[in-house]
Image (cartoon, rainbow, N blue to C red):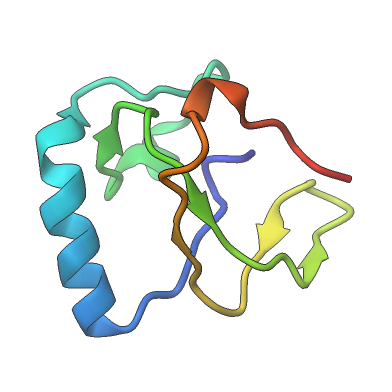
Amino acid sequence: MSARSVLAFPIEAAKELLHQLRPLAQDKSPFTKRLSPAETRLAHFVMPNVVGGSPVRRMDERTANFVHPSCGDWRPDKDASEVVREH
């Protein structure tokens, strides 16, 4: 998954997400690919140990980024270490 994959959350869901992710905050990017200053300027990083599900309507074939028209739910039934890209 790319660092540019973005979900659009309703404001109340975004507040709840912030509340749940705040304890997982970290200064360094969890991505293996080094990100440019422009990509990280407004970024907030968290430890990658929670899983969220979101319907993927399409994938940008040029960049391989997911395009998400809607937000999904937390997936407490999945461990983050087991998540792989589904084709």
